[in-house]
Length: 347
Image (cartoon, rainbow, N blue to C red; front, side, top):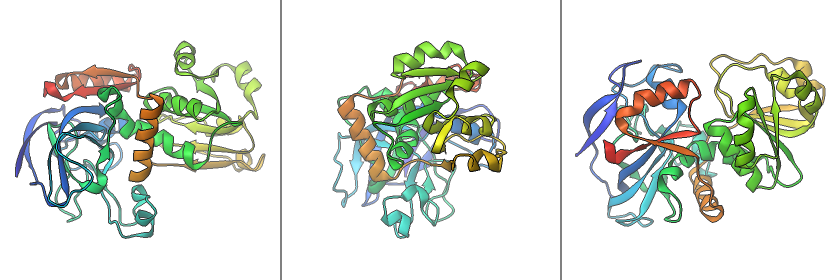
C-alpha cells in the first residue's frame, strides 16, 4: 500500500485537517502520479457539508487534479514516468454499458466511480480525492496534460472546464449563435472563454453590475444586469442558448423568456431546490430546458488539447492547503476570481 498525506474532513461540516491514509499499490493497468495542483470546486464544499446526500467519511475532496507520473503498471501503454497527467471527476466506470462504449462514461448506466466520496468497483472501498500528495488511477481515466500551459491554471479545466465545454460542443454552439452565460463564477468564466473561442456572440447575464468589466476582459461581447428591468426587457427573445451555471435559487421562467424561438437553456449549475417552470414558459416559443454533466474521457482529452492549442486556462488564485477553510468561506460569498487552486507542495 502507498502511504498518502492529505487534508480530510472526518465528519460532516467539520474543518479539513491533515490525515494520512493508504492508497492501493499500482496495478498492471494503473498510473500513479504525484499531485502538484488541485482545484477547489464548489461541489467540494457541498459534499463535505452533506448538502446533496450522505457522504463517506473521512472525506478527502478534490477532483481537479494535475501532477507528474511517478510509476506505471506493466500493461500501461499511454503514460510513462515523468509525463504530466490529470484526473477529473471520475476514476472508473463499468466500461461495458452502451454509454461507456460511446465514450460517455460520465453517464455510465452502472454508475461511474467518483474521484472522491464514492466507492471503487468492488462496492466497498472508498475513493479519496486530490487534496493529497499522490493518487493511483487506472490508465483509461488518466488524461494527458500539455507542458505548454500554466499547470496550476489547467487543473480547474478537469471540472469547470469540461462541464462547460461538453454542452457547448454537444449543442454545436458556435458562429452565428447568440449565447448567454448566466452567472460569472468558476463555471461561467470558462463558459465565456469557450463560447468566444467557438465563435459565438457571447453575453453575460449577472445580478452584479461590477462584473461587467471582468466579463468584457474575458471576451464577452455584451453584459446584461438581470436586476435591471430595462436591460432584461431589451434582451427578451434574444438568445439561441443560455448556459445556466448558477447553483443558487433563481427564476427559470424569467431566463426562459430571454430565449428566441427554438432556444435552449442548458443547466450545469445545481441549485439546492427544484425549479418551478411554468408550461407556458416553454410552449410560447417551442423552447427547451436541458441539463449536462461533465464530459467523457475522450471529450475531456479533446478539451485539454483544444485549450493547449488556443492558450485557454482558468483564472485562478493559488492557495496553501492550510488556507482551505478560508477559501471555502470566501467561495460561499462568491469572493473568488474565479477558481481557487491548492499548491500541493504546501501539504
